[in-house]
Image (tube, rainbow, N blue to C red):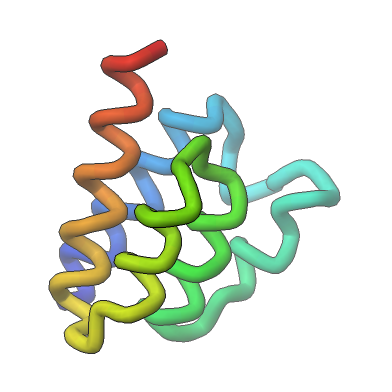
Length: 81
């Protein structure tokens, strides 16, 4: 799970074009998100996804499934852009 969480953070860094080692003020809470669940929640705030997708993400119980889902959302958003 730690590897998957690191991958989510790395992909978000690329997705948002920011460095999470010294993030902009608005992303500071992401740099300090201690758990994978908090990481997913923090990243979800910055994704261009619809309400249904946000609901699906919040209702997914398994943290591994949530991490995989947010990776898929970032990929889909990037392809749509």
